[in-house]
Length: 229
Image (cartoon, rainbow, N blue to C red; front, top):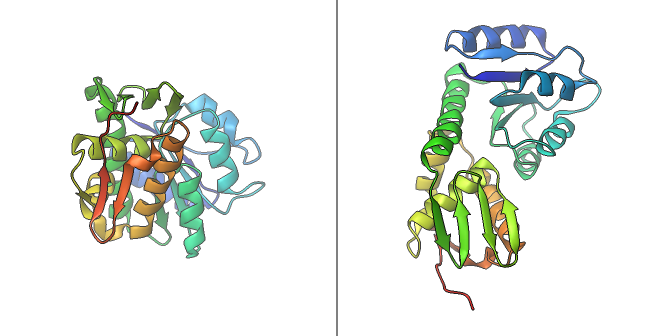
């Protein structure tokens, strides 16, 4: 049974989401003190975190930073605001998805299921290592290593890179990436994928290989495989 930490101060919404998720056999936990969210996080040890942006004491972005400082647990943001910058900020901070209030519960559960299936199924099944551009991709630890160092990727970053490398030197369409990442492309902004790919490139730049993820305008992305001297 997966454990979900729901960081939401609206008691009515919290109760409704908890009740609905419990029907899907998820264990849902709330926050006892919104000034000490990390204490509940460390006690619950959740498999997934859902965070509202507008919270007492500190906003959801603050707690996302705190969680990402110590964990790669998947994170979904909730927001009643419709500012595109909120979605961009959440993805830049390492969130896995973004849901705008009010939302259909079926959309939320679909996103939760897709993320849990991707994160935990692939972490169990994809234990082999791959070589790309003289770098070693370890699917078990979500790391990429070469002579310039080792970087750790988020679940989304690792998943995008895995899809691209498995189809190296071939274009992977944006629609294919979105459907594999978020299960239902109807509810995903195209900009969400762009933010995730740009973040992946930036991480790969740290070990000198970000340039080998190329954008094909109007088509998708391609992982160029080259032997580097």
